[in-house]
Image (cartoon, rainbow, N blue to C red; front, side, top):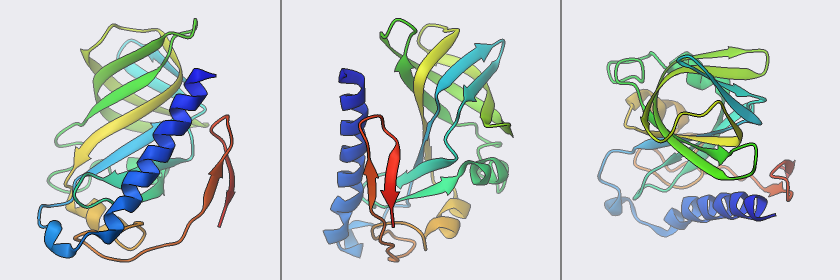
Length: 190
């Protein structure tokens, strides 16, 4: 299926980008790290100003923008907990997010939204949202939410020791091998 191939290809490219920075020197990394977040769910539904991600994954991929090239995963609950922490938090300056998936009839769809007020409840994640660009939808299947960068110092402090790759905030590396099957499900890890 083309969609599965695209998703798998995107995941592989993200992994290659995240590991490409291992050969870089610290001199290349003088700019502050900017973190991006990727969240996946089975379905996104829209009701009024509420975006609900049903069947949301328990983890969110976090990676740095170039030139830092580091990546990790965090529990979804960590994003919710840290949302309002610090002067430059997402609560103080709400992030934009790209919401990408398919309509019920399999057509690709994408929206750019501003998200606020995350909440977890029974395997679902919800945000308040405003559409910045794109057509309103009632639902999106197999959505990915890419939350824009944050130079939020608390993220850097909290994740430096868990990031794969060498960044300005730390050069700690963890070894994690993950195999993803053709449906996008994690099969093995160590």
